[in-house]
Image 1 (cartoon, rainbow, N blue to C red):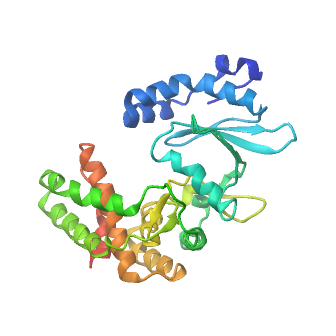
Image 2 (spheres, one colour):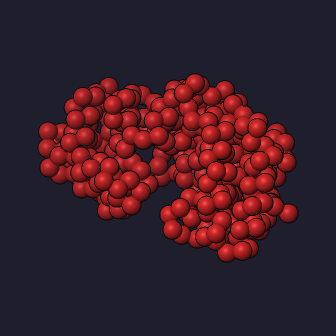
Image 3 (cartoon, helix red, strand yellow):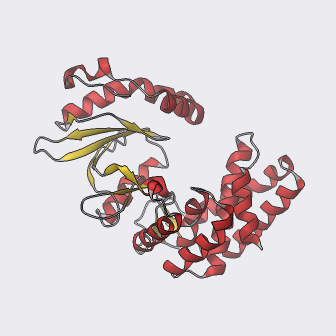
Length: 303
């Protein structure tokens, strides 16, 4: 984790979480290793540049190191350090568009590195800790209904491009899975083809699961960590089916979310099957079998 004594000595006392280093090396190779190696200097530079004071132990996820800080006026914030890539480049665009309405507020951003200063939420109160999984699902649904009401700004990745890429990738992936899985993925692709010509234009979060919703003083729940995309809100439902996975609850969650978001059920089903296809293709390209629980979501929604 991170230990700080004085801003000028940050580069000498920062400890990089092993899990973050391993994840960066696994998914980003040499670029990820270089990012990890440069984190102490990157953190020290932005603490000086934005006149921030470390304020507690660090947090981290799959892609970023998050340092609690305070500004000179006493405002509590977090410094998010991440590798700038196709996914993270869109995050400040989405956060500026939402402007704190349903999502964490962006306070400052550096275009060159992707470093962000964000308002501090309550990391101890994640939606994933809410005991009632059905109520948590409804929280996700209400947030999605609010966030996806906004048209996507120009320059974001588009769902139509992702859909085209999946369909192009599928033939090469099918021989690498079992016959049963092959039939399921073909059905997912068929569902995707039915909706791919109308990909939508809403601002999507793309990764709104229970760990990406935190409590705050100014709102009961706020979304964090978007991987924004321009597209159909039906593409947003999968993370809430995958996270806190319960096969018996797949149908209930899907129906509840489509109702709250006022989605056409058939289209939402097709876009959710497209997410099953997308995640399965990612696994296959990585030399792994598709995740069984992802396939189970597909089976439950296919029929």
